[in-house]
Image (cartoon, rainbow, N blue to C red):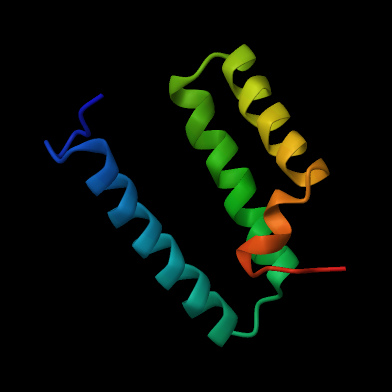
Length: 82
């Protein structure tokens, strides 16, 4: 799948990830809480997905995320949490 910019998907994904990282860094500097940031990013992500992915696809993505949480895969990503 080609990104709209003509970059390979992995390049576009890397760029998007860097932009999101900077946005998170900025919001943390503005003393916005981690849960609020994550909730806003998740809501925005779901809204964006809903424009191009069928509901079943979104459910599959969310089910994969749930499975990752249950397997403890996210704990090693540096976020930790309670």
